Image 1: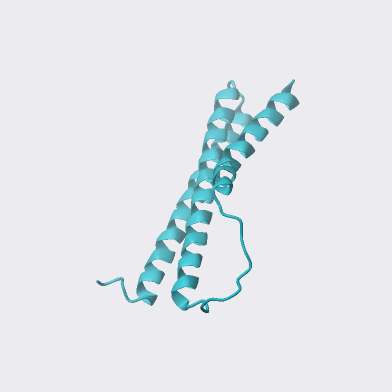
Image 2 (image 1 turned 60 degrees about the horizontal axis):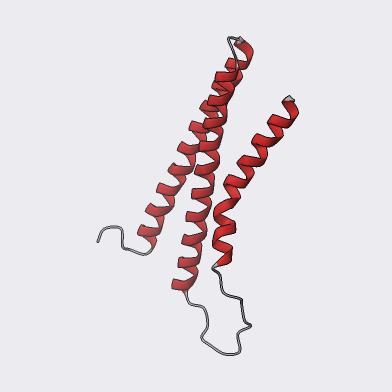
Length: 122
């Protein structure tokens, strides 16, 4: 019974994480091979890197929140067992630290992007 509930929770977490990707995949147009056009410039590369970084930061924060929630569920399910409660607290703290690191990296990336493009002090 425990394996089924654990498997169900993991499956729900995976579906919750992948749902935005699946929803966004429906609106994308079908790609066509380029027959002519202009070369890619630095602004397009910058925009692409910025979008990828934002996507990864959002996914990472979602994973961190899932870990915090999972730790809370583990803490509630500990029922006074010290080892399980300690593991749950560790999971919660790891989620909080992970979210802080990801958000810190986001701030660093935004600051560096502003300094490189010289729009930081505008």
